[in-house]
Length: 322
Ligand code: UDP
Ligand code: MG
Picture 1 (cartoon, rainbow, N blue to C red):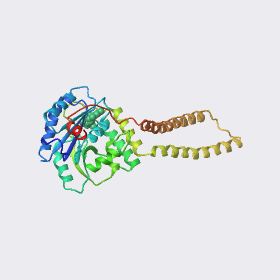
Picture 2: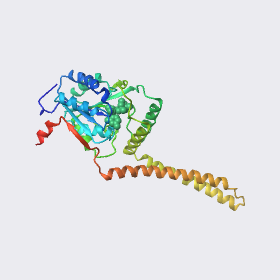
Picture 3: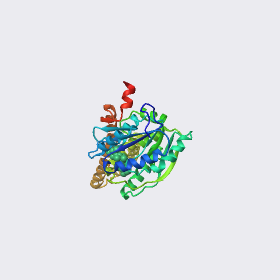
Picture 4: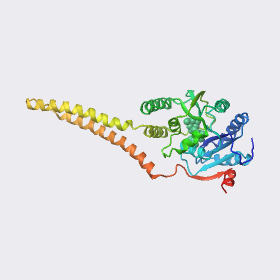
């Protein structure tokens, strides 16, 4: 378990944490028990994503008690994707495992994932859900809709995929080279390619506390996911415009014909309806374009993806760079 601080570990385990203080000690105990059974040197990279509870003090306490734990505290809540990014940057292992800090990603699966990677020939071992667990109906419907939309538009089948993944070092390096600010770990990971195997698992119940994903946050992630992977919505705007042009030509000719034939239609209702339909269509199209512009705006500002407030257990690295 405890090894000299300078040797890079075989495995890094990255866990993003947001308000997990209450059950974190037990969660880490369970995860470490599974890791100890691997009989390989590992490190824990715990990222506190700006929690207001005692998450950070538990991380500090853990790091003080073991020399294989690094804690990173972000300056505020940047969201899970950014926290994962911070963890991946700090991880030094030959393989990096990413998992949640609420035991919804069962530690009992780690041994199997590790074995698959260790056997060689596989770069990413990804755990996929066979059952969406006890998710509320809205979430289930929402994710169906989102993944259906995403896989149609982007060509990546991400349905049932999770952030529970074991990645080879070269995959982590490749992921870190993707420079975007609009982070979507799962999708970006799928984009990388490499040799993948899937391991099915049933989503466990949350250790304690509540999920931090509000509907609004999920919708935002969905928009990031779609806009980061596909420009199809923009083409749909053009396509719809084309359809309306065709309809306009037909309707225009007919109206003109009627007018010339002295049968001008009584047009007030038609005009109002057309105004309303075209008006909303224009607004939606502008919104779609605006969404992409907002993403571009965020990217060109070039702000860092996260800010680190403090770190613990990083002595090994600072010694090396000194
Ligand atoms: N998480 C995070 N930052 C956030 C929200 C969540 O680091 O802003 C972490 C959280 O602590 C957990 C993981 O991401 O380890 C998954 O979060 P959660 O359980 O809330 O999501 P769900 O399981 O419902 O997808
Ligand atoms: Mg969870």
